[in-house]
Image (cartoon, rainbow, N blue to C red; front, side, top):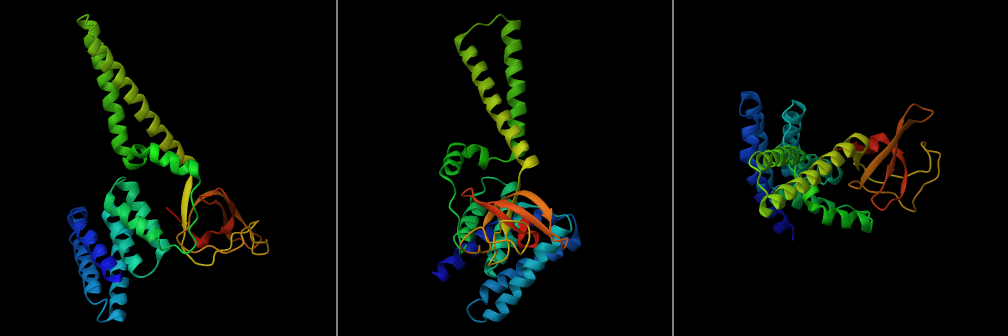
Length: 277
């Protein structure tokens, strides 16, 4: 099983390399950092069985290289994706899920990223099942979740322009063909649906903050402080995904998040236990 997982992760990693190189090609120093990180990752994969300790050190260096590029402003789905791959290899499931999610925000619908995200999610020790309604809406509106925001915006503008062009042509030449009427109102319905999708996501981004637990044994509490009772009957592991609903400071000045789990339950946790996507 470990050999199959290793092969799978190596293959999908390699496919992302051309995109990564294109994203930093304009800066020689960034390109050198990328080449070094890729070499370290590949060497780590090759030595995983023969020298596990050296392999882990190489994965650490590769992750550091990818993180340095991201911190330097080279934001791309490929970099987030490969940083996440490195973190999975290091057993840091929470931070890996954070970076897979960030990659998917830039490239929704990317099957390689989605597969690796699902793999990382399968390693979460305390998975929280989603509410049935949430699973239903994600299935029915998969086009909304799997199409980039920028792509939907372009489609909405194109649909709007096409609708008014057809309307102007029909009026200019007094065309009343049935097919033209159907086409006009089909485009109108499509445009409304896409604009609605754009508006919903814009509203969601403005009013919803998503996060992932990045440490183990996180106790969800009934109030923002260590002295409050636990909200759940067991602590949560890293990798659990949450919605951050509120932020407050305790008497010691430490920041706390009120979070909502995917099953609808909620509670307070320290801000340093969670990374925002």
